[in-house]
View 1 (cartoon, each protein chain N blue to C red):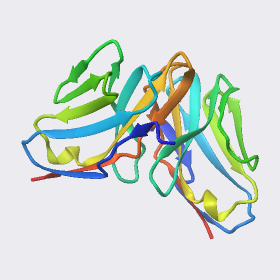
View 2: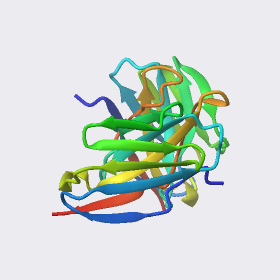
View 3: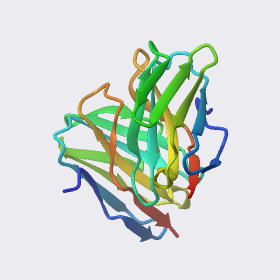
Length: 114
Length: 113
């Protein structure tokens, strides 16, 4: 029962272009969403988050958009750089029902081609 | 100066053995977690401790037992290892309960033969 889905296992983008990573969720109780980045042989690293009261959060080259009605969020990376090549995990939590738990998606592997 | 460290990084063992994975964080965080990343790459929460108190215990076999001697350490002991236990195990920490931005260790790749 996947509550957080990332339907694209992989994505390739040219350096300098925009990378768009998508994430869908099924649990309407989710109210906080996060993106983590993972390099091989390392643990995931927190990248950016968004609360359900917002529809956009920006941090430098990274912007997360949230569409609650569609239960969809996306991570935009502009411009993409070779160092952005990594696996990106979408994650979600439900403060009221699962206070301590974060649910992760399966990840999307991004390759930025120089 | 590693924030969240795990030992060992790799662990190869035979079915039926008992093994432990250790985790330490030097961030002063109250809350620690164990995750399992299976062959399908999903990161699934197994356990969470807050100030040495168990707060999350997912449907994990009884062969898995976490122990938190203090709030900076969360160890994972696995009894009677099975082939299906082969996975990467990640330890993580966060400042306190309800903080969803977590700091992960580098992972321990467990292979059961």
